[in-house]
Length: 306
Ligand code: SF4
Ligand code: SF4
Image (cartoon, rainbow, N blue to C red; front, side, top):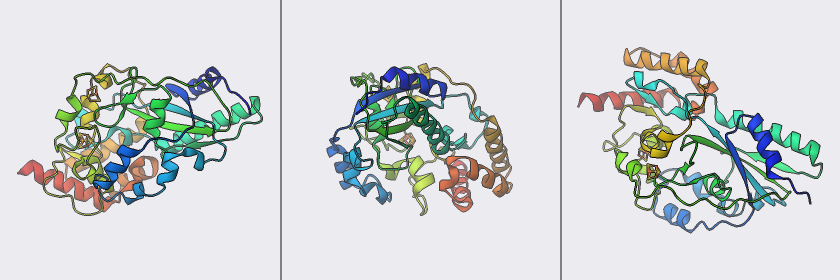
């Protein structure tokens, strides 16, 4: 079995545009709190989270002979200029679909590593399999669990995509970084629907992000959208570490232009199906149909008129 020095992976990761990466030994995770969260129904209608518990607990079941999990972070903390629009789309969706972008980059890293380490067998994952990505990123020493359940990193804040490579080689394993939230509660107090629970987990039933994307039924009247029509950035933007974070270069301005054009049309009460079709193909917004987006917009407008 090969050993891959972490600095080699880091160099390749940097060339591919990742802002950080780390390695953790593959071992079984303690998912007691995740199990309790499911039992309490805080996952709302996302029943897929109940499946594959064994694989979430033990990634070795996803890829045979996994010894190491490398985690890679990609920052999306750029200036997206969305403050100029009344209606909002979560900033992660204002760019090319990270699933495709990151998967390609992880595959490039695997190919280059295999050229140096012919024994390497590896598989990339980006939010496409039951991998507990935040937990592994923490084990890789890349950050800590914020009080709004998201990964928080010291240098890049919380607007980071996480990808993983599971492989059969060993590497230099990290020590976990402790929480640097301290007495801060800004994310908790920022949430307009009190969706953040005292243990740092989210009650998806109350979360704008779940309601505007995953909930296929009508959004309950008690959920205030605060003009978000796809996802929500409120608790991310509130985070002190996010605000101290290094900004990345403007990403995917062509995609943002289409999104902002669509928001102009929403604000002028015009039809924007054509723009939405373009956006859906390029971004993670393909999780919803045009009719759901229109229904979100209508609810946001009604709430503004109240
Ligand atoms: S994403 Fe929005 S609604 Fe959900 S927990 Fe954060 S602030 Fe609350
Ligand atoms: S806002 Fe404060 S409490 Fe919440 S994740 Fe950021 S540092 Fe932690």
